Length: 331
Image 1 (cartoon, one colour):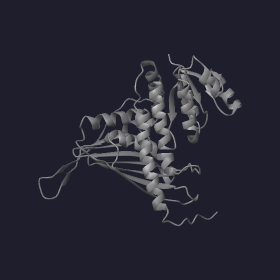
Image 2: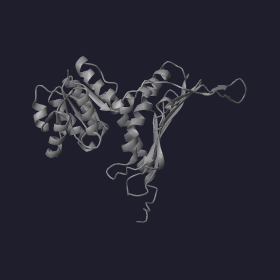
Image 3: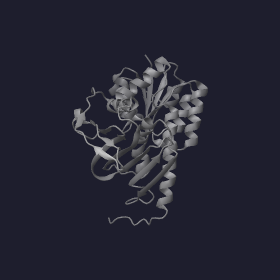
Image 4: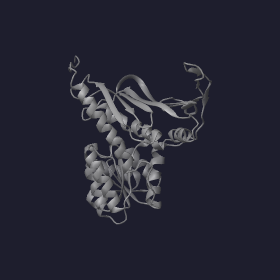
C-alpha cells in the first residue's frame, strides 16, 4: 500500500490529509507551523515531519501538496527531484513555464504528477462526461459553467484564479481539445487590481464554444455546468441540495427541416448516480496510480492545459481592465 506524506495543513489541506488517513495511506504531515503539524499528526495517528525529512524518507512513496499556490512549483519540484510521486492541489503552478518544467521533470524521473482538479473525480461529472462521450447529446454545441457565491474574498489572487480552474478542467475534458481563442472581461469592485467578477469565453477548433462565469459577490451559491448538444442537454448543478436531482437530462432537440430551427421540448429526466465523496475518490486515484504505475485523469499535462487557458484569460482580462477606472467602495 503506497505511503503518502501531506504538505500544508490549512483550509483545504486538512481535508486531503483526513481522506488520505481514512484510506490508510497517510504517513506524515508537514506544515510550516510545527505546533499545527504536531496537533494534526496526533489527531490522524501519523508522524509530524519537516519537508526535508519526508523527501529523504525511503518509506514514503508520494507527497500531496496543498501549500500556498506560490509554493506549489518549489515544493513539487523538490519532491520530484527526490524521486517521490506528487499530487499538487490546483493550480499546478502560477506560471506556465514552471508547469512545463514540472511536467518535464516528472517524465525525466519517471514519477507520477497529478493535479487536484477535484470535480473530475465527482461521480456526477464522471457520469455526465460518459454520457457526452457516448454521444447521448449528439454534437456538443455549447457549454458553460457558473461558479458564484458570496465570499470568500481574496487579495492575493482574483476570482478567476480562485474559482475557475475546476470549471476549465471540466470544460476541457468535455471538448477534448484546447481552445483556439480565449477572451475575458471582469470588474474590480473592492480591492484595486483584484477582479471580483470574471467571465471567460473559449472557442474550440471543432466548432464548439464555452464560457465560465465566476463571482464572489453573488447573492447565493451557484455551481452549475450546462452542456448543450444537438440532440439533448445536461445540467450538473452541484449546489442543488438534493443529490438525486443534481444531474438533469433534457431531451430537447431542434427541428431543422424548415428555414428556421424549431425547438422540440421534452420533460426533465433525473439521472441517478451513486453517491461518493469526490475528494476521497481523488485521493484513492492518486494512491492507485502509484501502486499500478497509472496515468492520472488529471495528470501534469492536463494541469498545464488548464494553466495555459488561465494565462490567456488573465491576459485578456487585464487588457480590458486597463480601460476601466477603479472607484472602490465606501467604508
